Length: 352
Ligand SMILES: Cc1cc2nc3c(=O)[nH]c(=O)nc-3n(C[C@H](O)[C@H](O)[C@H](O)COP(=O)(O)OP(=O)(O)OC[C@H]3O[C@@H](n4cnc5c(N)ncnc54)[C@H](O)[C@@H]3O)c2cc1C
Image 1 (cartoon, helix red, strand yellow):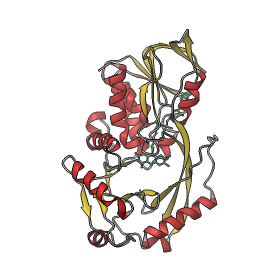
Image 2 (tube, helix red, strand yellow):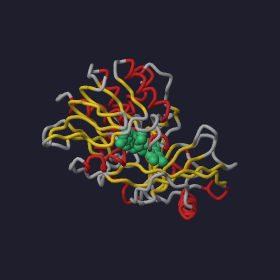
Image 3 (cartoon, helix red, strand yellow):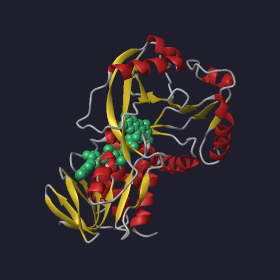
Image 4 (cartoon, helix red, strand yellow):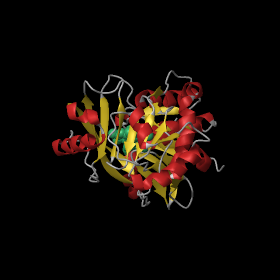
């Protein structure tokens, strides 16, 4: 019972997706979570599933994720489905040309349009945009319930023969002369031929303890929730790289608005929202959305996610013997990428 081919550390969306994928391939795999499943960054996530990124590497991973999530219920035999809201992406007008060519590239694999400022104003009258500023529009994008999605993957993985162990904290990787042997946990040692570290922002410390390096770091995100009598009925999810905003409507008629904190001092347990950051979010939202003037705060939350400088994350072996994989660092965007991450983990573990 305490010996596996592969052990996945971390029951967030990345770990659960990798666990499911490996279990489906017939790998004897366990998913270890120190808490209950989906209590880390994933539980705070907006769960926005969209394809457009200004970085084609991320766009391609996201396209894979989008098509997978569209058929998620069939893949996992669950009831989870994507709530379609549409998605818009904005950046400074100077970036128009680069954005347009990425839209051209992606529109053959997913429905995506370039809206001129006139077209965007007509479709989304609440947007404050400058003359000549275009908007990327993806009508089929939306969001998933991140808790349901993570649990669905974990349960489907169990049905495929995998083992989920909650309340199991990995204290350290057991190494003998640089050879990976297994894990020391609060439940005793667990032996495995390979390990996949999907511990989010805690991945770095776990690997460093074993003398292994990764470029993954922690950064905190704050999201505020607002209501307003003047929200449009159909508000799209959005990323705004001009004003650094991101968010989406929720099912209760409020709108979520996030703005990066740039705080890299990982302090757990998590902090409540900061008033000065809320103020900043209100100021930025006011620049972009006409409804922001009349919005009322419903609080919000702060949470750390794992980051890498380029945002692609790290999905790779971190030791010469190629039996320790890290999958972390997806920089506030890992939910939509999880199906592509799981495939890459499978390729590494099974040498495909
Ligand atoms: C506020 C917010 C909004 C976001 N919105 C979006 C969005 O709209 N769309 C999108 O695509 N992405 C979004 N993201 C990013 C995305 O949610 C994350 O990148 C993704 O959820 C990370 O998943 P994970 O499994 O890597 O990490 P986590 O969910 O943090 O999971 C890591 C797990 O590892 C466990 N763990 C850690 N150490 C140990 C140990 N030693 N032993 C056992 N278990 C351990 C933790 O308890 C945790 O459950 C958002 C993130 C945040 C914070």
